[in-house]
Amino acid sequence: MSETLVSDHASGARGSTQATRVLFVTSEFSGFLKAGGLGEISAFLPRMLNRQGADVRVLIPGYRAILGKHRDIEVVADLPGLNEIPKCQIGRLRGPGGLVLYVVLCAELYDRAGSPYADAEGVEFPDNDLRFARLALAASQIVIGERALRWQPDLVHVNDWPSALAPAYLNFFGNTTPSILTVHNLAYQGLFAQARCQPLGIPERAFHTDGVEFHGKLSFLKAGLFYASHVTTVSPTYAREIITPEMGCGLDGLLRTRAERSQLTGILNGIDDSYDPQSDPHLQHHFDRRDFTGKASNAADVRATLGMAPSNGPLFALVSRLVHQKGVDLVVETAGNIIRQGGQVAANGEGEPALEEAMKRLARLHPGAVGVKIGFDETLAHRIYAGSDFLLMPSRFEPCGLSQMYAQRFGSLPIATNTGGLADTIQDNVTGFLFDTVSARGLASTINRAIRAFGRRHVLTRMKDAAMKRPAGWNIAASGYQAVYRQTMAAAG
Image 1 (tube, rainbow, N blue to C red):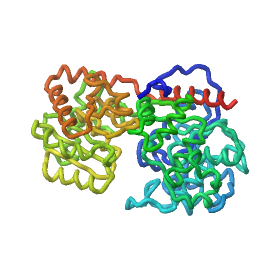
Image 2 (image 1 turned 60 degrees about the horizontal axis):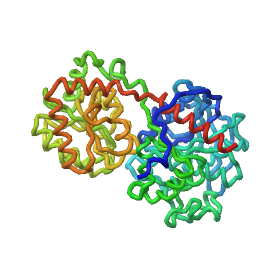
Image 3 (image 1 turned 180 degrees about the horizontal axis):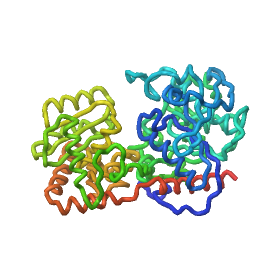
Image 4 (image 1 turned 120 degrees about the vertical axis):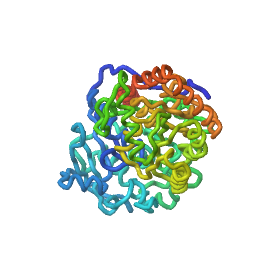
């Protein structure tokens, strides 16, 4: 794999910046409605960018969760529809840290129960093409200024497939405002039937290899990858991985072209400073690198909450979406190895029904040694990070990952696959443990290494100290995005 094609911005100096106006378009926002890491990134990256001198405002669908918390949203614009995409209004509210949020108000598309993408039973909404085309169209209309706001962005920054049509709409409308697409997970592409192009206002000429077409279907993500001015991913290693046939999900050719043109950049995600063992409000027992007494107390709380037996052995954590990508099946297969050596497993998450059931069976098979709560619990997750000695993260691929950085901040050492952002954030035998072969055998061997380190307290303490000190703030990532913004705007003239 060539390492010269892809630009890396894992760090960077702030330098001089102007107040670049950026519309940050997202389908998730932590505190309102999220399905994964995108919600965390959307809540924290724009705020850090603003602290560094930008003027970033977030555009998000008007989900029921937002309307329920903000019943007095100020309506600031009316936007027309396009073909089958209904008209909408734009509401404005102040989010955390004073962040300006623009909300796409369209009750027929967004005022419903469930996640951003599926109903309460996990079934994807059948009109997701309309729901997220409406988001992307609203972004392009704001950029153009068509009957919209008195604020117009210099650049639009879209995220993953749900907003990836925005650069395409700008192209269709003949607008040259530069755009950035950040790929958080290439595996989710937003694929729909070709017949949906006309209802979504996509011209016939765009259904082409050099356009929105992907193996005979309309691909929202392909549209963004083709029409955006610049593409970023959420770690340098993942940026290099996705230009290969093995990891490119069929889009590696297009991505290689973007890389060859210096239009593909890997920028490592950060985590918020609120993940702090000395002050985290979710914890009843705080601690720091000099005194781990509070960590042991958090471990006792987790064991009690999950019905596990008291123990002085190592506590392994699994805080994850329970999906195949995350290697949860490998955790199930190797849990017996942990238990035979005096360890325990504390798990919290939700996802694929088969893996949820597998985790529940594991807890029934090993009562007192395995504790599982299905359904993500924010407070419990923080306490598991704080109380555990090790985090299990055997992902088959991982664009960036946040859990390993949360765990490190709390002195829990990740045991992870040497891929994507895991490779960029974990130094083997220093701030965690890495293995190359994605298999139960590879995971079990690395678990054994971790248990040996647990038995050598000076080694474990040194590693925890190094993990907790590892820089992981959003200021580093924001500086990387600022550099890409400047580069992209300069290229656009």
